[in-house]
Length: 120
Length: 120
DNA sequence: TTTGACCTTAACGCTAACGTCAACCATTGA
DNA sequence: TCAATGGTTGACGTTAGCGTTAAGGTCAAA
Image (cartoon, rainbow over all chains, first blue to last red; front, top):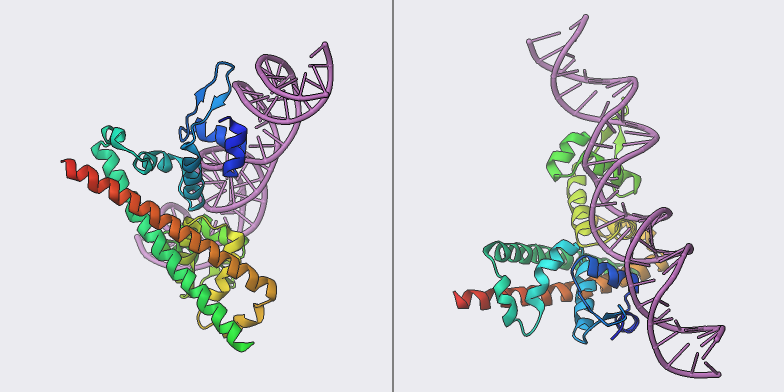
């Protein structure tokens, strides 16, 4: 598919998609006329990227963890250098921290809302 | 305490603390000589702020959810306008989405690491 | 064949969350 | 008393993640 279709399917601007290409997150093939051509599986990938960006991860990190989110991923095992694995473990731990933190704050907000509603 | 102590206690630069003041997240009192004076409870608040920033929330949102994270918060019930409550519910839902998303990706990373280790 | 929708690259603009001076005042120990 | 340390307010610099023109190529439909 062309960039416009991917754009509407993912709710992502063409500009953002081109930016993701610059950042090596989504690399489309090219048609004879120079147009970008995206495979269907990239829809999910773009949505993944948006979600990860939304949780505060920079493209530099996303680029590193994307290979292990693809399925099937037998091909990507070659990328698994020791440094790569260390990065992954570190980012996984950071995600744990974020999850715990978000959960605590979510609970606090809920508690607050409950107390306010109890007064009404 | 003065800004330097709060800085080292929270691992946050003085510049950032002054920025948080500009953004109305942490408003210290002033000493006779013009120095900022921070109460002890603000240590926790700054750490909260850092965590929320790290999860991708902008200061604009953080400013709105901070009141319901303070304890005791009886005073802050006055701030609970309908718009405020709507914002809180919305942000709580967004936090839910982030948590689910992070959890899924965390699982994918773990799974990948397990598979790689199984080959070693 | 020409309009209109969609594509291309290149380049400048923008906002958030600070970093980094610069120039100056305050406090304290030698 | 004076040098070090740490505080103050600007103000300009930086990076990420795009938005927004600008100037032009492509292609299907009328």
